Every structure is written in structure tokens, then in C-alpha cells.
Length: 230
Ligand code: 5RP
Image (cartoon, rainbow, N blue to C red; front, side):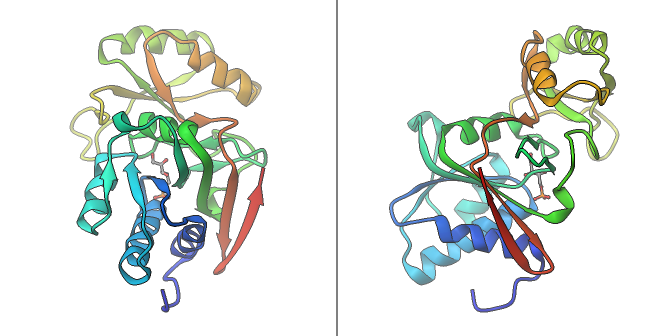
């Protein structure tokens, strides 16, 4: 990469590729920042003969990676990966994340857990004091259980509803055929308590709070990248 990065998302994504070494199995995130990472990884494979195998957190990322010539394998083939690089919607000072605006949080959390190192790449607009500052919590629920799950979450103070599709003419369906509840909770509930509460709600497949999974956060602002390690 000789050209100047077009923005902070690209700058931080390119920075993260320096942690990819020959022979690694690398998890690919989903979203605009993760896309820059995929592009730079493919460039290094072509121009620097970097040898990597990848595993994608979404169909979209899989198609992008394959179209750029990266070798993508399925999660069914492995239980551990070397490195996972993905963006986030919100990042707190203790590196708790909110993810899932892009519908693919089930695979994203599996890869974050399976990774020896999980690097989060973001521009500084993603830094918040607490989860839920800018977005409701995405909660993926089994389609037949959405009403029961919503009622349980409302009983714990949650407010929200099923996510609409982009065209706003129907419901949003996740990659795994589930529905998504976007729920906001009172600030008095701690992130740990909220994490436990949603984990323990029957009908929930997965949710967007990622706690205790991050190895490092790379934050870009004005073209400069800062690394914060756990
Ligand atoms: C998708 C995600 C993304 O990483 C998150 O939405 C950030 O996206 P972007 O890099 O486009 O800002 O969690 O589920």
C-alpha cells in the first residue's frame, strides 16, 4: 500500500494487517472497516506473497474475500483461529463492544471467542463511555420466540421492537433466519448485568454486547492509529 489511506477506517484496517503473519488462519469481520482489512490482506497476498487462510463472519465478507482471491474456509472445519479483525459500533474504556448493526453478530461472536487474538479496528467516533450510548442493543431471537423474548426483556426494563429491513417494508432477517430486536435499557443496569440478563433470556440466539473478548483496540483519528492492548 503506497497510497495515503482514504480515511481513518482504511488507515486503521491497514495497520491491523501488520499483525497477520504467514500461515495464519485469519477471521474476517463485517462492515466498512473490515472491508478495508480484507482488501489490504488480499493486496499483501498478491504483492507480498503472504500466505493466509481466512474464515468469514458473514456471507458478504465471504463473497468479497473470495472475489479478491483469498482462500475462505468454513467454521465447521476449525475450532480455533489465530487472529480475528473486525470493527465495532461502540467501544467502552474497558473494551466492551457493541456490534451487530450489520446482522451478523452470531458468527462474529463465535470468531471473537475462537480467536487467539481479537483486534478491533475503528475510527474514534466509536468510542463511548458505556454501551448503548448511540445505539440500542441488537438481540437476535428465534423467529417463533420473538414475542416471548421481547416480553422477558421488557420485564427487565428493555424498550424496543423488531428491526425493520433497509427498505422499511418488512422485517430484517439475520443470515441465520432469525429476527432482530433492537432494545434500549436503562443506564442504571451495568454492562455485566445486561450481558448476563440477555444471555439468560430464553429464545435469544445471540446479542451485540461483546464482553471480555477483545485483545486490543486500534483507534484511528486524523490519520494516526493508537493501539490499546488489554
Ligand atoms: C457488523 C459490525 C460492524 O463491525 C460494525 O457495524 C462497524 O461497522 P463499520 O466498520 O462499517 O463502521 O459489528 O455486525
